[in-house]
Image 1 (cartoon, rainbow, N blue to C red):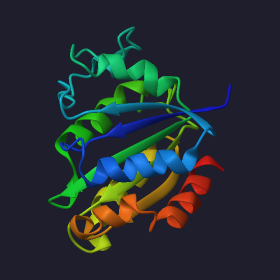
Image 2 (image 1 turned 135 degrees about the vertical axis):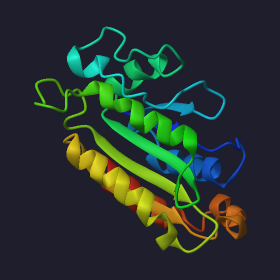
Image 3 (image 1 turned 45 degrees about the vertical axis):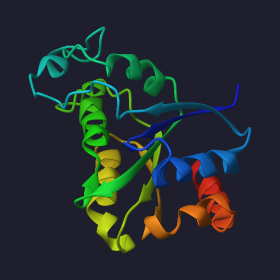
Length: 188
């Protein structure tokens, strides 16, 4: 079996710019990876409540919070690569995307790293935004820092600035070469 990729789509719009970017990215991947795509927006995923249960012991359910995130841990753990697809709202990923990322903490005992199920996994991001690309720096740098802390391999991000005016161009092949280059970087 080839590489397995989990695509986490944090956009509230199933037919919006981020979803179109993810669709075109997956097209550029072709059959080089087995894809599991998840749309977060309609799921019930709370943010981490810092209860500490996951840091005291490795939990069978991974996290003490009983919500839809429990169903995503197995997909995350069985994937080689995790692609975060999110628009930028107020200099940050969407709240559901942030909740997903926060809840990954239970997969590592960060006091001594005696347990770290994230180590070695690849992570990258597909980002759309309504302004210039630099507006995504805060979110992208946070994702890079998360990867560094948890010993994941951050493969970078692909940003589509001013995405509202780019949707047709996303679908018509204008970004095809950029997507192929990014896919090669992610899969390398």
